[in-house]
Length: 369
Ligand code: AMP
Image 1: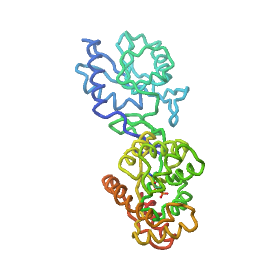
Image 2 (image 1 turned 90 degrees about the vertical axis):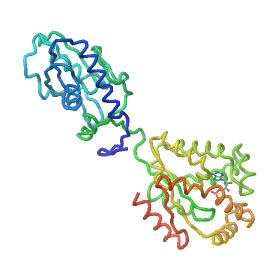
Image 3 (image 1 turned 135 degrees about the vertical axis):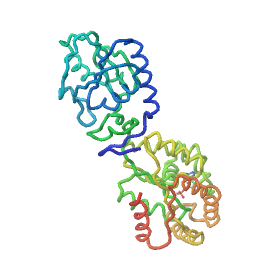
């Protein structure tokens, strides 16, 4: 992923795919042109890289010239095409092949046709490396098309976003979801995830999703999901993966505009972690970090029994259930440390001390991400 100005872009078309498409264009055009000496006209600025690579591949003698037009403002194509440098040579009776980096609305192409209307060329052919069929609104024939792409803004290989990105040898596509911060708050039951999540969501403007809270809300409201989850929760066991994953997907979807999420109590299994990666990927995003609050078991049991006196949570009231939850954490959940360590995303934080001290330790980790 790359950032240009305020926007994020993801890799879209590799240098190799571009090279292959260029070669196909060269072969087709060379075949059609035969022995004639064509004049290739690159449309600046975008097609400087394409024109250079194209003519290096072209197997026969050719001429190269440029015209300079400008149409884009930011990420929007404008109707108003400015002619900055026009034709500087006589092209009467020549075979002219326009080399465009991209054709989207066709406004630039309209201007090109206007420029050539009175030039008495022998033939005017249009070649474009990229073509957005969904955006194209004109009737001009496109004689040679490299790669058809969806109607999304791209940069690289000559194409820019407000001046940046032209130098990139591959093409990047704008990300649908702009940058999010997504954290997994991790740790055994009673580690203080819920308490800390409240501070973090304020400070970083994130949406906090606690799967435990969502289950408890559903149990309280006697929903089908609540009834399904209840027996597991009361024993301190995990609710089945698919039920939990479906619920989490729905919670994330409810907050489509979020700056990011704090996942608290999720994922708890490898299957959930994989499902979460997939979900983030579908949003053009990712988990930035798993931050684990590390607290000793005996401290946890004491904290949870204390919390049980006021929380009304049945699974906090009974020491056996508490110990089972901690055991389930070590048996089934702690393996996720390896999952996120392998991605360089695991950060352990000492979860013993005052609430403020622990918040500060968490802030220090997040601010460095
Ligand atoms: P918590 O509030 O995170 O301690 O969760 C309370 C209970 O809800 C757990 O003991 C599980 O029974 C259930 N639960 C919460 N999150 C999950 C999850 N990600 N996967 C399976 N069960 C969960």
